[in-house]
Length: 96
Image 1 (cartoon, helix red, strand yellow):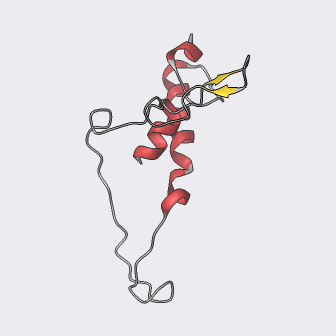
Image 2 (image 1 turned 180 degrees about the vertical axis):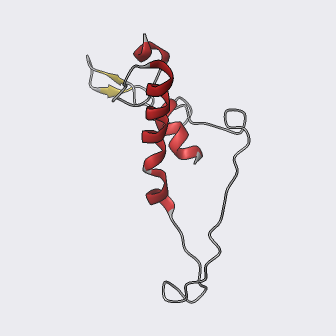
């Protein structure tokens, strides 16, 4: 969930078009959300054992579960402001 929130609101690759250089190529300059940015998150697990998937009966979603989070945040921003932003990340400059 934190990954999807970061994708929707903070993460962006800054490019210097004069020199064709990525300005934030390292994690030192690339802004990603941390604990101070993300507060309480409630996770709900589906209580189902599936031994066909693997012998332990566990399932992993990974990136697949993250796909809808930026879209949901963009829809929430649209319903709150009336402005549709189709280019991530959603920043205050794009809403003005």
